[in-house]
Structures are given as structure tokens and as C-alpha cells.
Image 1 (tube, rainbow, N blue to C red):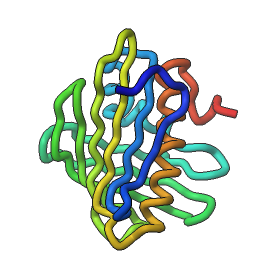
Image 2 (tube, helix red, strand yellow):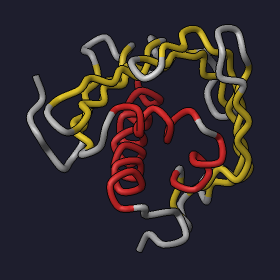
Image 3 (cartoon, rainbow, N blue to C red):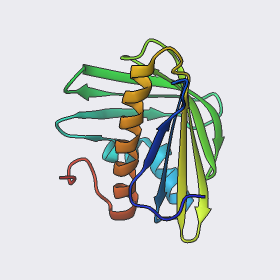
Image 4 (tube, rainbow, N blue to C red):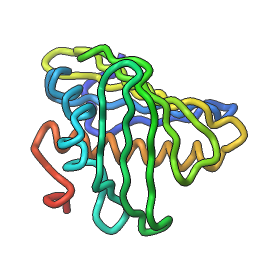
Length: 164
């Protein structure tokens, strides 16, 4: 069990197929689930000026519903990700396919939210990178940053615009 910790922990399995990340967020899991499943909230915290930012989020949060986001990356230019919801179990779990403009394979992302005291342990599993070790490495780094942004948004209201 993860204890209260400010920094995310991210790992890659030895076969480079699965990226995992965990963080404790000092907020109820209903609040955390809302921040990851509401497109208006997601575009407020997901990204960092000068690196990459998604300006458009669309989410039909239901089993079989579609989602997408698009934006810009300093390193890659225009970027887009889309998929379909595989599991929607508020406020416990959210899972979807992940098809990005920069990765040659379709992968799956699963968020799990566990109550711990007055907060939430958020666990993410992103699988399907086999044969793409560099993508697994980059996503491990990316999810650690994303978890930090999410935590700052949920705990303190920090947005892309107010983040330094």
C-alpha cells in the first residue's frame, strides 16, 4: 500500500510492455475521478506551456463511449490521442484504449482509485508497449509529470495557466 507521498512513482516492466504509476492525492476519490473524467477539467490541468498541451478534450464517459484530445508539443508539433472507454466505474476505475499520433500501436490505460485515509491512492497501468521500449520509457516519464499536474490541480487548483 502506498503511503502519503507528494511525488509519483513510475515503473516499467522488464519486458517494456507495461508502465505503472502511483501517487497519493489529498482529496476524496470522487474528486480525483471527476478531474480525470471531465473534459473541461482535464484541459485545465493536462499539459505544461513550453512542453506540450492538449487544448481540446472530448469524452463520452460510458462503456463503449469515445474520447479524444488534441494539442501541440514543442518536440512533435500537432498531437492527438483518441480511444474508447473499456470500463467506467466511478469513482473506483476508468479504462480506455489509447491511440496516439506519435505511437505506432494501440495501448490500454487503466486508472484505479483507492481510498486511503482522507485521500486517494491513484494507480495507473498503461499496457501494450511490447517491442517499443523507447515509447514505454517516454510514457513513464510523461505519466509521472501528468500525475504531478493532476495532484496540483486537485489539491490546490493549479492549472496550466497558473503553473510555474
